[in-house]
Amino acid sequence: MADGATAPPRPEPDPDDVSWIEPPTCPRCGAFVRIYPTTYDRWVSLATVEMPAKDAPEPFRWRLMRLPDLSRVTTDIVAVRVRGIDPLPGEPVVPAHRMRCGPDW
Image (cartoon, rainbow, N blue to C red; front, side):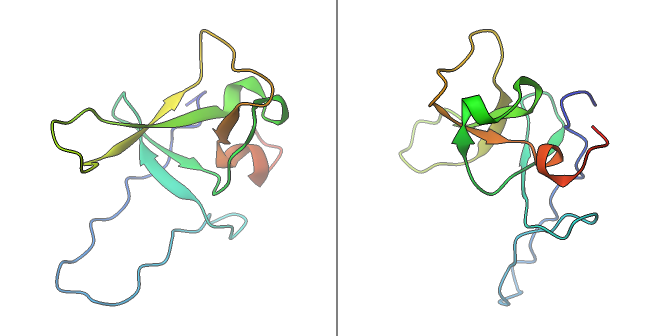
């Protein structure tokens, strides 16, 4: 919960539905979010744009990592918290949407 990984899982798209799939929106502010699974079986809502690490507070820094696979096709992407070694100030990170949505964090 402290990481902000409290988002519900994204719904599975219906294979027979050919309508346009819009990105999910935040129920509080209405902004577009990206929902990704984490490495510890939770889901997190991330902002739609990257920003330099110096502009994102430490608890809200995330990176998107590809799961290793034998093929060249990406099978899935997971969100990983930036911990341990601090990124360089100009290094891009994906902030958690909670950082931009409201002051209740």
